[in-house]
Amino acid sequence: MSADECYTGSGTCGTVNAWDVSNFTVTLNKADTKFGSTMTKGSLKTSDNGITWTTDSIENGTIDFDDSDDTL
Image 1 (cartoon, one colour):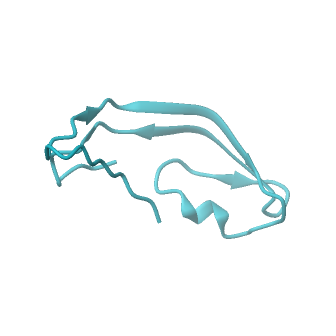
Image 2 (cartoon, rainbow, N blue to C red):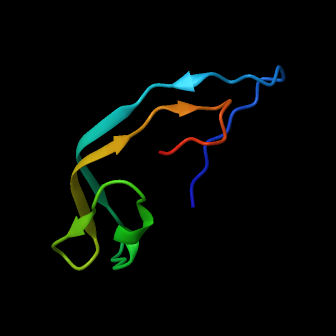
């Protein structure tokens, strides 16, 4: 589960520009064969039965906190 939140008190939060992550690696302290399905962007792969997960790229779209129709 993930969430993007903003609270300024004024009701407007603005925009976060699109951004990418490349050559992304996550190393867990114990194997989790389902960890790859926790990402909604990118395609995580493991070659050691769930301890180390990698992806070449994760692309994130623009987030407009004042628009409920954002697609990440």
